[in-house]
Image (cartoon, rainbow, N blue to C red; front, top):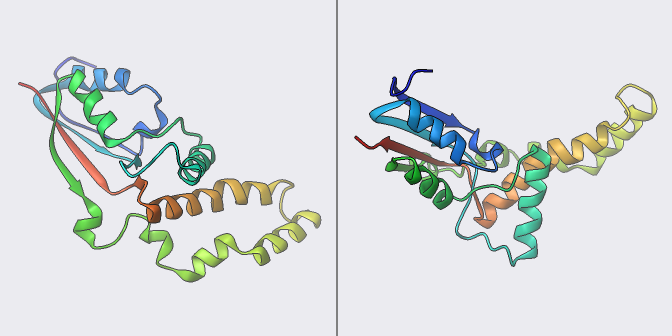
Length: 175
């Protein structure tokens, strides 16, 4: 890609998979024109997260494991890393405030869905289906860790206020 070519770039649910933000932000800086915009929308640990809290650590670690992510970043970590590469925060939009619903509402609004994802009855049915070779061996473990684990961790962390999935960060490259 050519230097200073693009007016905008975005990272939607992408930075959470990077342990080191600097190479990606350096590349964004390289390809953006001066005055160009970089939009970030991702899961972020909030300032309410305390590494000294066993519950906080467990919920976030479970989510990171279920999604195959390195440790999640905070908004401040992203803002500070972006500054190193000439990207200044131009706007911070909180979609929770815009919509009136928390970011995890897509899961939590349905008691039936939340029951299905956590139900021991469903686990029992899956166990029987595995025993009958209708479902592959290991599916129950997959469901508990990756399907239910992800949803439950997102909702739990959201209710604790230690995880945000609703902030849109818009950066502008310095002129």
